[in-house]
Image (tube, rainbow, N blue to C red; front, side):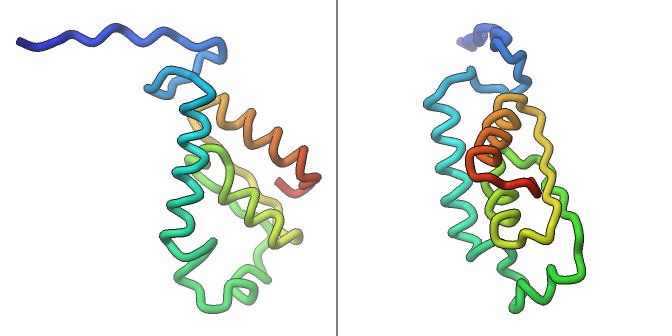
Length: 108
């Protein structure tokens, strides 16, 4: 017998993310993002000389940035870059903006 799932309630931010808005879910996603970046081997693991690769660039766009961890780390490591991210989940963007402000990042 199939079970029909309950319809998702819109969150106060009207997030389009499919899991209910909660602090625990945000924490899980932030930790997942950190673990994924570590597993990949860093910010740009395919570039043997990351600094030389990024030197001529002025801006970077992170598509589906989630909580912004990668974008914020990149902005902190390379202050000459203007780093922007976007995501379908408004609460993630709010979290990333708060983290950028708290870290004093003016380039993210």
